[in-house]
Amino acid sequence: ECKIENCESCFSRNFCTKCKEGLYLHKGRCYVTCPEGYSAANGTMECSSPAQCEMSEWGPWGPCSKKRKLCGFKKGNEDRTRRILQAPSGDVSLCPATTEVRRCTVQKNQCPEGKRKKKEEQGKQDNANGNRNRKDTKDAKSGTKKRKGKQRGAAVPATSTSPAQ
Image 1 (tube, one colour):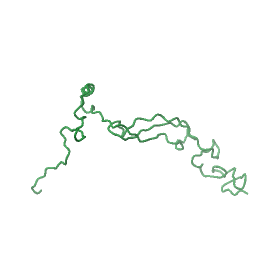
Image 2 (cartoon, helix red, strand yellow):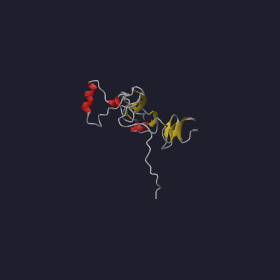
Image 3 (spheres, rainbow, N blue to C red):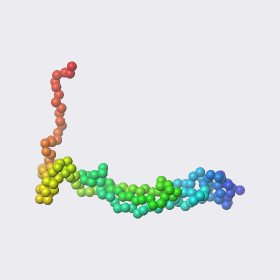
Image 4 (tube, rainbow, N blue to C red):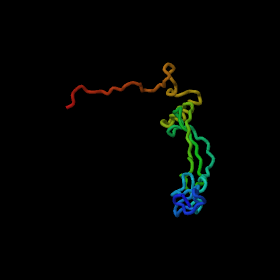
């Protein structure tokens, strides 16, 4: 006599070979759906071996970037991708991730400022001659960048002493 719930016929008391209609057979038991990672074999109500996703090889690691920028930072992320070549029953949700991300560190490099000004050619000539823009030089004493016309410090708003009416 079959002791398995929702089983129509058994091989033994504890192993089902045919489930009641609408249920899936997996390892001698009956389920409403196949367990995670398994899929129904073509046209049957039997859950086949783990659903196989065929994946491409991982692509190369992309450039180290931060907020989609490639300059002006030291620590960022790089990623690589792969494609799903074949998914079980066309269900890509059963497949592993197609993108992998890892932390990366680069030598901090300044972003070029040529986009703001129309002096792109001038900047290229200066760099070729070994001259640098004043903005790029460091103050030898403090180690901070010189800024034209801007000084650090609290800006105090001008206030009137007469009471508002």
